[in-house]
Image (cartoon, rainbow over all chains, first blue to last red; front, top):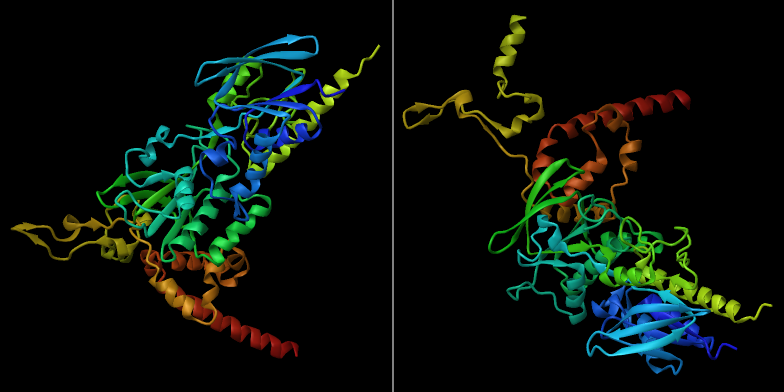
Length: 351
Length: 141
């Protein structure tokens, strides 16, 4: 009954991969379209070393999903591709898939669509306070994650940094840039701080925060970082960073002391937030999906993420709201179930 | 009235607008200063030191960690329960145990220096409390 049915999944990150596997295990064909060259989404593209809060290697979580998508007979993978347009015919969609590299065009007939286009990291150069891209040794958490994956944390001159500062909420919770909380950067930054402390035991680490939002079980990172790894927390914001030619002069306020500080750091890590990427905007345009005031895909009811409000189109993952890998995986599963339910209901011939 | 005026004259930096926001330690007013023939004594040579924290000095916290109960200082996450139940903090707002732990942990030397004298006051209060308590217990028992 379902052999001739297919579901289109756009985006091969944690949500899209989980949705694809669940659908394929039901015996329904999957057309998986990924804009980038490799499967896995942001965690693979940015080489996340481990995932918060339990330091689980990223491969352990995403590896099985990627392998399943690559090896399953029921999943057709299109990498370097986007969905360009679609046509609605009776109970199915005829989608036109464009390969961005060789400009070839494929047509697929699908019965439902899952959009899981994910997020992009905030570009810290947009906020000039930190001198990202101008000052050496001012890096994003995404770049630090690559350094941790390589097992070496080095300054631009090849020296090992001794005093490292993390600035939280860069491009998050800020009226001038992005107003929302990315929900994961506190936990990710603290996780990275602990990983640095393991790699460079004599380093001094300062986390400059306005609130620590280690929600749910992530809270243990916060305790562990202070009690076992002696990481310092400074409540306040950083106004300016100058490069002295050797070190970074960080100007900020410690709001617990109500005193401005000017201290020298070897390296500054910016906890850049999440924002909707170009892929999300493009898909929204093609399928006529609604975007909210922040640019994320807007579900029909904000509390029910999978329901796009459009017949046969379902949403999952960080294209709806900022979220962690574990949340994205369960959203992928949820959207898969909804899509399967939709396809089964449609295939019943009701007189 | 006249006594009051004399008292005010003795105060450092008395011509500074909003003087009460600046601690005495940060005001330098030289009694006699000669700058190449120009008299810069008193208010003419006045300097206000900045209140910017320039470094984190962790030498003090390392010392504290060597004390029997001091090794747990890293566990403090500034919840403020200690200040909430501290009887001295309720009498004297500058006496804030949460804050003391924080400035020692972060090594804010200038902030620590500001608190000189406060601990003598605190000890005196503790002494009085002890005696009051012992008297009370004697009365009760």
